[in-house]
Length: 283
Image (cartoon, one colour):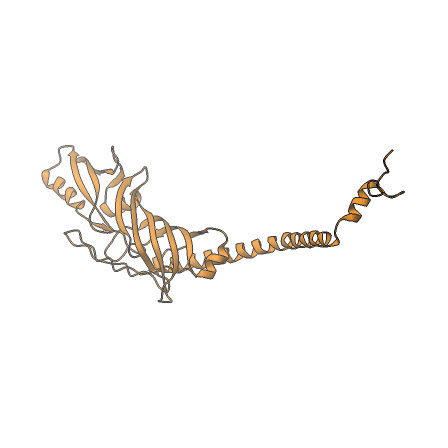
């Protein structure tokens, strides 16, 4: 009968698992302990790091909102969301990957009777310009909404959505004489200006002179003012409550130290001197 090796069985009174543990190198046990300590440390620090990133992001969003408010002249600070994680790495390199802004009631310029009721903008690669009071976005897309309520107040007629996309219907009730209904197409008339093309006027036997007067009302140009500089009109659509104007641009800027001076003049040829503020503040 072959002799039994002394290493093939645990020593008397020692469990089998204990014997295997005793044979493991001490260095391996130390490495495992270090890994456990490191994992525990990371787990303890991670919530603090996430909290710091969140707090700094919220502060930056508030600063950007106030800067945009100063630039556009809104009565209240807009809603701002800085996208991308982590935020601290974006702040460290001085460029924000994407910033979404939603502003309400951007006032009209000196040459424009109609305010922008809401502006939804998405800016990418936003950073502070060499001018400390200016911020600059590599590109931006936005939708500006001009409400029918504001258009009605400007034109003096009851404006609502038309029967087809991009069209409006405006009506006016003339005491004793009757009613007038105007169908018009909303058109582009310059980089940031909208206009109207009358498609037809119907009335209850009103004199032609009255119809001509109503038609001339739609010759008014509507420049969109106090917007970030560098954006141009791309398309126009209509919904149930407003005219929606889509704008976009590259190297878009707005000043953050004062209200935009985006009060350009619109000529009869449809050109607009868009002398608005430059830059955004990524403060």
